[in-house]
Image (cartoon, rainbow, N blue to C red; front, side, top):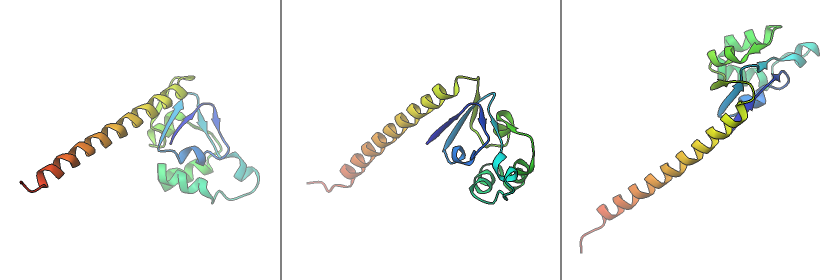
Length: 126
């Protein structure tokens, strides 16, 4: 799954972090507004997903910081794969999806050819 983010990902940003590839616009920001505003500890999936992507220390810093995290910082932390100009994230994500689909097809094709060759090489001579 590929995620494209533009604007504010300030509520349940962990959903986007579940994607294999994340493309953000330059102006995108991440935040966790609901937990502390509601007096709730951010101990659910948001800490887990941010820890997986950025590391536990950075996840804590992100969740305890009252300021939004920029797309550039998220990229530096390894949370997002690519930062593109505003308005280009969806087309870039779609392009990535097409490339991944083509790669899978080529890999399947290559393995199919390889297995045919190995079967014919392993076949006894008559």
